[in-house]
Length: 71
Image 1 (cartoon, one colour):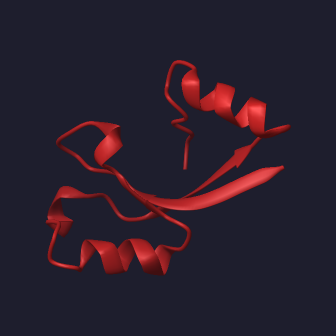
Image 2 (cartoon, one colour; image 1 turned 30 degrees about the vertical axis):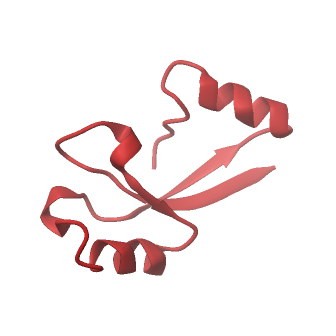
């Protein structure tokens, strides 16, 4: 199975502060909402994660790298 989402990576802090959403349009809207400084984030990139089942997905997220897949 595959899970796809969009992420805008923050330059200055932890990955937990990256902006993630189902669509690029949603990420851009969040960045432009006034709550964030768009200059602190990279351009949105599409990320696709392949996994066998829910447990495999959970294991990938819990392993070193914390579910950080290349965009």
